[in-house]
Length: 414
Image (cartoon, rainbow, N blue to C red; front, side, top):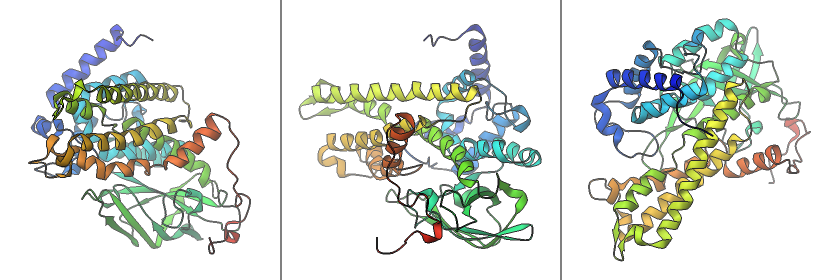
């Protein structure tokens, strides 16, 4: 495969590069250039505000959500143009993390299932960064089994009344809107009684409680619903067809996470290139070189697998189960790299203060935050099941509750 730019692609690249050079928030360049894993923190200013300002500028210039149709705030660009933009945006692309869930997961779901008026109303402000969206799926009692959810929605006139709880909702504390999957019929098997909605996160009865993580950050939240009223016009898909609707979200989620989840490879390569241990330069150690070579191959494979997925989207295809591969590889790789770098530091690996720790303590922070990457968007075990059953065609797991009405599934004595 030839990855050189065609004349048209070269012209697009120059246009993008020139626009970024003239419009990028250069005042943030130093902070964004620092190696980082997880949510970016600014020394001065709020990351959400900075992200919204950059997204709005991109939108005004015609560079937001490049692959989206123009009528929804995008550019109608080709997959390769989207890749070129990401390459040229560079460090400023880190400001897009705030919008990953909305633009990468909620947006495609609305495009597939919302009415035309709803699309025209909600997609442009999502693309411009005016509105931030979150995804309300996981629940305390369901674990990795999304279909085991218990948040219920009951029809009352032309509205639905929602009660229940969601957990591990990324960005809920600063989101304006969210997509929500609920149980509307407990008398049928768990996958058949679900219905999807979208709602204003400022609706009466919605309560968001941030969860403090081991890393000190607060990216995830608990969200409680108490008699929350949602109009039927905000339903996505048919009543009882929520599981099918959710597959669009979940497949896009795994593609977005697998494509964007940092592996830490560049950080570990730079670190080892400059590290001198008690036995000499780290790169003189055959074991270190072997580790770096293995991670380099995986990192390259993830990049080009992501490009293949983008090409599939350009043909109008829904992201497939193959995208679970990217997430399954990237999550453990990030954790392995973090642990290896910390071990290379010896006793100094216990230091976490960025002012005194080697590599500004980035690998220590990575050790604390990396486990979430193996859970968010589906655990490693779920990813392996998806790959085994849907990609390789292996026999499925035995599921004793598959055809049992949800209200008959035992909840005690496990």
